Image 1 (cartoon, rainbow, N blue to C red):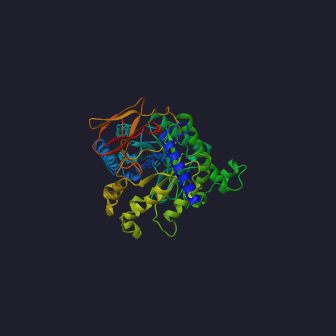
Image 2: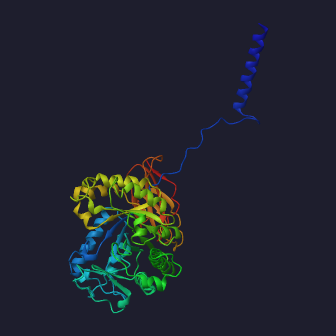
Image 3: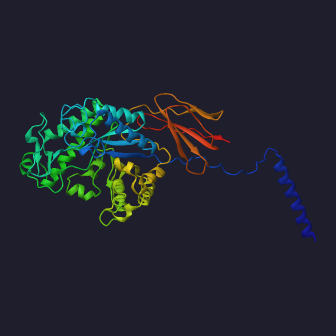
Length: 481
């Protein structure tokens, strides 16, 4: 009995002490609270969404339309289509055959424009194209073939006359193609000069090289060049690769020295070893050295392809992109082509490819080859692309800083059904929307204004972008209830 009584007293004393603590006092402690809720937001992935526009042979533009009005309208129709699909960049071929889309000091007017090589079309084609793209917030990257000058059906045909500034000893003729000789220092300097002229005269966002370096399948008679210029090279294959390396580095260096905001990109063949052994393009080295800002391998085969499996090549380039940002080129033209594998007879193949690229942290964008196939919409492929690109995307930062970092948006607020904010400087604003703070948001719009009408319940955040596509820290969210 005595033991139970003492236990009861102890329990009563403990209860009194606990109650005293709850009421306060010098030694009182607050009740424990739940840890703060995580407030970091899930922003959508930035993406360059690009399309190649091929002008060689008039493939995508101008398709044998030789009037100024017709050409301008065809190009504007393309841009309007791209804008409706939330595409934010184009790679337009301005030098496909040792020619130019402007009044160049080095190469003749392209035959694609008038039907005749060297004929002035009567308007500044390149300025028109750049201005129209920029008016729609679409970047314009000038696509060049570095070495090709002309093609012909066979050796029985003649190549067109060389530009007056080109010395005949600078070129190499093969049965169906004429190229600048990659071994010559004069050729490399000429390429650098052409790039410098283009970026100095015009407000291009980038310079882009395709996958044609040393022509595949040709027999080269460059032993004399190797003897003259190949000191220190172990073999003639290394010599050829070094020639292309010097050209790539020379172009990169002149861009950085002349207009560093310009982005330099290359779209190599899908196989790293083929680039290295057959085209003498050591793309892996360019990526390692930082001589290219963006690498866009042409992964035009389907997932599971026996020789160039899309997924396998994507993995290889992810591991070998190094300092270069990685994009993926898609064989858009293959969808609905009766001669293409079964995978390309359904638009679901494009969805699967995008699922892979969007999960890959290295990939910053996608490029479609080529423009005219967006209008054809075979097997509903453009409908699929529209669904994939249903929301706008923020352009990733590529290349080098030129402008000052953008100041953050301030005083973000909702007034009378409008989202409003304040900005300073030459910036665009990105409006993000979140239906749920625990789920990934979406880009609602990218605008040069500082207000938009809103009617959807949820959360909104605003950031700013400068001309280099550097993004400020996003604002805190405001809620529309």
